[in-house]
Amino acid sequence: MAFMIAVGLGFAALILKPQPGVSGQKKAEPGHAAHAEGESESPGRAGAEDAHAETDKPENPETTDERIAMDAHRIEAAGIVLARAEPSVIRRQVTLPGEIKFNEDRTAHVVPRVAGIVESVSAQLGQTVRKGQTLAVLSSVAVSDLRSESQTAQRRLALARTTYEREKKLWQDRISAEQDYLQAQQQFEEARIAASNASQKLKAIDAADSGDLARYTLRAPMDGVVVGKHLAAGESVAEDATVFTVSDLRTVWAEIGVPASELALVKVGTPVTVAAAAFDSVAEGQVSYVGALLGEQTRTATARVSLPNPDGAWRPGLFVNVGVTASEDRVPVTVLTRAIQRVEGNDTSVFIPVEGGFKALPIRVGRSDGERTEVLEGLPTGQAYVGEGSFMLKAEQGKSSAEHAH
Image (cartoon, rainbow, N blue to C red; front, side, top):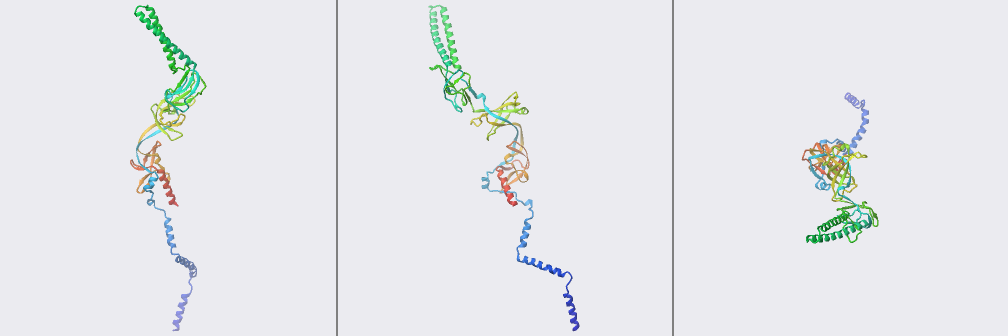
């Protein structure tokens, strides 16, 4: 029995004896336990860390939704209008500087044709006048002399006619000699010529016979606008002075300076586009004249385009840009130039409708005339795209991208 007790105590001593390295492990156990205890006190911590780690994972590009979601109400509010890719003509234009001028074929410079004193002025600068309307009234000694001459010639003609008719009757009745009849006939013809000459002088200065011999009325030679006025009441004017300028502004000229290098493009009949430099106004026309000489100072030839101007928008003195069509090419697929936007990655794109909204479609573009642009790749003929309002979609896409990144 004692032996068995001794053996048991020996085994117990061996079991209770510390092993090498066990004491260090025991020292780390409290910290480990604390950590375990902390985990037990915060049961959601591991799940949050796992969720955070999962959120940081990059998204699969194939699963990213690039659609710009918009309903019908927002589409209408944004002013989005669809168009279709279609064939069109791309025109290459050369832009030349120009200026609106009076149509010299429809502009009159009014001169009195007789010297005189201005009694009154009826027309004012900028006033619209009709042909034959009174512009001013002059008092002219020259007109008085011409009217006196005309009246004297008319009276002499009347007397010569009476004498001629009497002598003709006497000669036919064989009462007077034929010589008297022939002399009366000659005097009648001379009087008729003198009266006609005096009448033509008055007609040449547009002055009819009047009770007031010295009164002379200046009249508008055509329908138009008074664009020049150079006289006032009481002023003395010369017979060759330009006192009024009247122009029919229903048509004007766009005058172009064409350098020698572009003369091959600008010919009579060449179609052009005239655009105002100061405001948004465009007109179509054709070259009606090309000068044969180059200016000594400018070294350019003068060309003209006749433009209709019913509303008076094209005012003389206005600077314009004249686009001369250099070439016309028909291309199979074009879109409106204003529909093209540069989106993420600086890609040239248009927006196309998809289910529930729109998405950007990258395209490769070619020639453009400002209004339409050729599509080389990325968009088939007939494909619907956003023709109006694409900038709004670009802004929406940028906003969505910023929110996603945040």
